[in-house]
Length: 515
Image 1 (cartoon, rainbow, N blue to C red):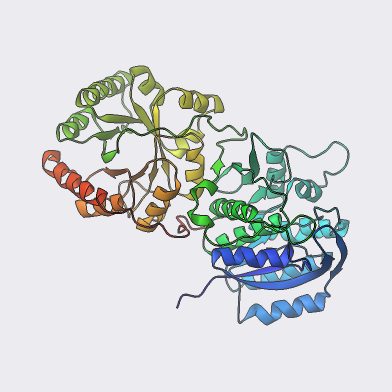
Image 2 (image 1 turned 90 degrees about the vertical axis):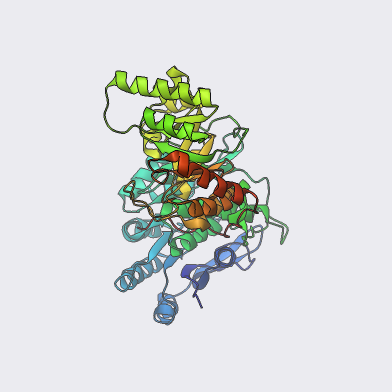
């Protein structure tokens, strides 16, 4: 029997059952994670107001943590309403103690005030957060008012821009920061959260859910992120899942009293493609206005080659989709000739040709499409990415993680590559193999055609990838020296897979990167 990961939530009660530990328990259930509710403060509240807040004594908080230490040690801890500087100090001490035994992620939701206006933390508590919790935080999830409070920016002059706030909070010690924007102005109906982590930074955007029932949104989001960290996701991916879970919880919110009702996190959010957010490439929240492209035919067998000669060879063998990737330094005239020759050959064969990297030259020469890695796209200026999106080129984008998938989607690509599906020696990379489970999840969730790539060495593996719903299956070495002999074998395998129902995706993807 597989034991569920354990998350401790050290937070406040809500007598109205909306926020605090009540919301945290619902969020953990949605992830299939066991949550231990540790009471740091007791509140008397209903749906319209908080009437009293009483922190528990340091001894009682200590006793709760000690009771759990050996029997139910956590993979992650989430803090909510702590209520006092003494409680903050107790949590910091326990995080250090637990980390001497095993890694423990710490998600800090710095609850400062209720949406009804009640203030939960004084200046001494703010200092304790800055001095004790930020340097220990794996992830900090303030809203914009809380970020300004932690940085002491509530005075005249107002807070700095959100990306600057996040950088300042990371400089103060937090490993990753997400400043949420649910209580701030929209951008074209999108809720924007600013993500700043070791792996990615940008605006995480999803459609605003039009509902008055928002009680417990911040608690749900922070706990969802802690659950994802406990499941092994890095912070950037954990925040993608947290945003999905919170959007679904807002959808399911309902009145319980006369005021704003609680959000209601529940299982199933991980299979709803409409909940997958987009991630910007930079500080400007620019998302292409273009719709996801209409697709005339499947990409099918997708050959990745490194020369114009090899392009002609695979085209003659009947391959319908080809990527030309010339990585070795070559003279510009030689590169231009290779691309031009390949474009003409693909056009004559009625095949699709994607040029790797050299998008401006591909556009000049009239190529059908280009393929770009995430690093290549990140190196472009916002104006260049906008030019690429408006160029008419079909764009394929690599993706290896949830945040990369969300970032790729923001450019409305012709396809997204998911990989490596299996271990590959073709390219050194830090990513774990995605496996068929993640490939099936990508295919169900991406909203655009998916190309499977990595470790596809024989027709049986190609068939398994296609059975997951992959629109294209990329083969690098497996076509061998005689594509005329191997291509028919791969094509028959893909045709066989097309006749079967697509594999059912898992409820949640698996982590593709370790810390």
